[in-house]
Length: 97
Image 1 (cartoon, rainbow, N blue to C red):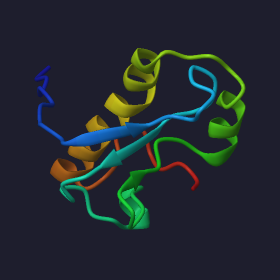
Image 2 (cartoon, rainbow, N blue to C red):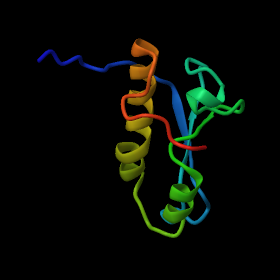
Image 3 (cartoon, helix red, strand yellow):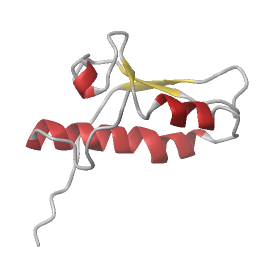
């Protein structure tokens, strides 16, 4: 089996609710490397759609550190982008917006 290393550099910012660590952070890719289109899960304002709305809402009342958001949402989102860029499809399929 051949494994491919997924590696790239992104310029991102995170926005938090005033209630941090409660709430769900927002990820923005600010260099426009990722196209701002629905099928790339990125809005025109640069915000990345890292999960479905119901999942985001379920996380809103929980306390999480930024490291959790990065590990569970930001890195998988960016890795999925790289995979789709290179192979034309998402490795785990699409999720609803």
